[in-house]
Length: 388
Image 1 (cartoon, helix red, strand yellow):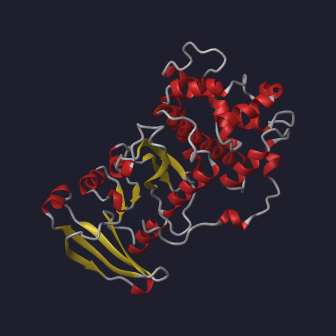
Image 2 (cartoon, rainbow, N blue to C red; image 1 turned 180 degrees about the vertical axis):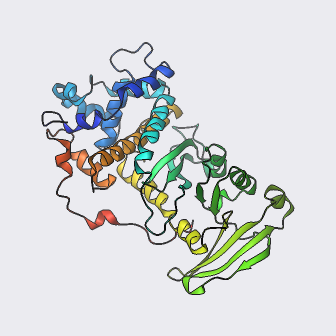
Image 3 (cartoon, helix red, strand yellow; image 1 turned 45 degrees about the horizontal axis):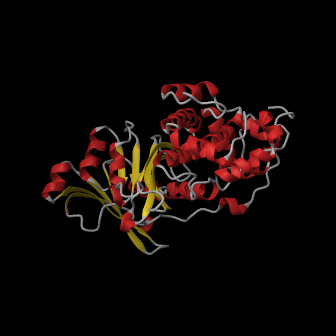
């Protein structure tokens, strides 16, 4: 990373070409390709994400305007919009998904020692949720959503240590959130935090039997019998800490063991929240605090929609959409990797903003991230609980 290289080329050099090519070879991605092989396709889409281009036309326009610099940028050649669009339609999306999973395995351990701000727990804590991207049902007939509308869902399992996604599943809008629980690989002794949409007792019991813990909000019509009550300090907002058994036959059949029920009153919002968990060892107030941190996945979704190009999709087929979304996630992970390598105090958001306007600058990349001026606008975060 010297002063003679473009900033974009320095960032692109962080990508392990060997690992990427392994993913390409796995699905024979470069079969009968000429100039626009899978690597060149990824480099151009990565350029579009990093510099916040609005579509394939913008990417091709910018790269064609800098033809003399493409080699030094790390891009083999520029192509027109049609060629790039055809590549997105025809190249196997699993190439980019597998490379995204490789980046997850690379980046996640780098943030494994990050501590939680509000509590001290040595377990991994994951938040599972989904975000919906509205699309045209006329252009994307495969992306069926509710009420005859088009929608694409991205299901994400977020590790709260470093806010690194560990699982991503892209579906149409009718795919129910609870089904994503069947797709994740359960980590022993980890805590999974979910909202009401994931309150399926059969699947929660599978988590329990796998040696994992859950914190979930139940539906209002939950029928139960309290078998044990513990004393709580009501000045902290806690209202009760109980061990319960489910009364409905089907629910009790799916989850035959005791569940811990905790009620918490949020004075600021003037609302009472109820949590269910299978962990009987952690302090009740810490359980409420763990759920409080569920808002971090909402921040993550808001961040990628505002700073990565995913609200307007760069293709209409399911294959093209998945390539687009996986490339966006790869961009986030690469910048998170760069942040750790530089030991930068900038947030990933701030680094994205700087890299986006500095792609064609020729300077050592570490010089971009010195003498930080803290902007409080970048620190904006929602307060307390998200009540969805």
